[in-house]
Amino acid sequence: ETGVTQSPTHLIKTRGQQVTLRCSSQSGHNTVSWYQQALGQGPQFIFQYYREEENGRGNFPPRFSGLQFPNYSSELNVNALELDDSALYLCASRSQANTQYFGPGTRLTVL
Amino acid sequence: DQQVKQNSPSLSVQEGRISILNCDYTNSMFDYFLWYKKYPAEGPTFLISISSIKDKNEDGRFTVFLNKSAKHLSLHIVPSQPGDSAVYFCAAGDGNQFYFGTGTSLTVIP
Image 1 (cartoon, helix red, strand yellow):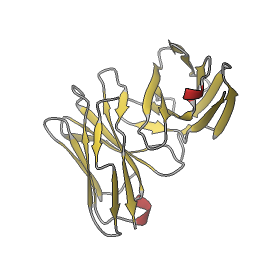
Image 2: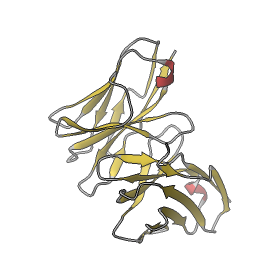
Image 3: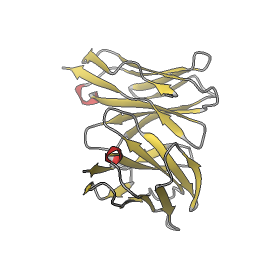
């Protein structure tokens, strides 16, 4: 077990809605990254937060946004959901040794 | 454009034999590499890592080899066990962002 938790585990939304996914990082890790994993693909980097500031972003539109809180928990927000947003969303916290530890993921289905 | 590639979508190996999973990358700036194992309905589990200053790292039955000139890394599992059956992802990064391959599904046959 990595110590990284995510909620909810599953979520069903309809197109156009907004969603918030939550992640609690492993203790002592101040960097968190979010990934989207579509079926049959590897995780794709969405963005990374370090000490509450976004410090890296992948090729995702602005309707994907995030927050990191002082206790290093974080949120991923997606606005104006599209069918292609259906995926497994993973958060990962990073140790001092630069290793990422993943949570179990949130499975989002957009209908 | 895929910066990290795992060209074998699947691999089957007899229990007790060696499993070799391969990964290629395109960006010479990548300096940190990881392997993850993933079971269905779970997040990826970290297995082993290697930094670009090394060419080999070993942890129990798992060894990762890095060939920087060829931009290639491989994961060796010896001896393979049925519990190793899972999807394996390699990831490469430059310290900020990690790029993942599409995974290799390993089946270890008892």
